[in-house]
Image 1 (cartoon, rainbow, N blue to C red):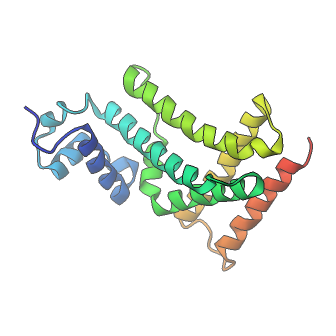
Image 2 (cartoon, rainbow, N blue to C red; image 1 turned 120 degrees about the vertical axis):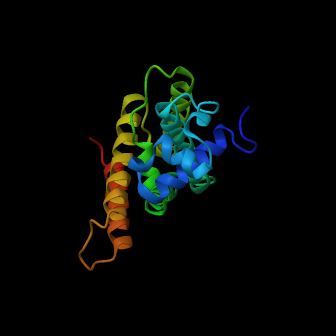
Length: 191
């Protein structure tokens, strides 16, 4: 019988606490079990293995980013939506660098259900990006290329910032505003 209060969601909560403290490398079944106050085999009542737990953690993180991005762009369009989306993405990464690093782990294609859910969670974030890009008249493959570029720009800056990679005295907010301006200008310039 599963321990009272322990569920797959509770196991993910514990796992997120661990990655908040120590990054993706801190996520082990033994560490989760120790934090939850159970023996490691007890976790198998809630998750099949570490791979499934990583997938569930990734899904939760993608959902959190999508929630933050969705709230940021709600009621906005064009440049305002794109600016809000990029700021929301950056703030999530900077606020939760350990979580964000745990999202980037590869999924196990053999874990069908969590793999499907992970694809759905990722698609939700992509859909928010595509909606923010709609005002630029991009469709099909062009919209996907733009969404990839947008994510790469926000990801790269935020990961560098969270890791302390910007040591010069210029203000990071000003640098990020320039990056947003460059992305918007690039979207407005025909290829």
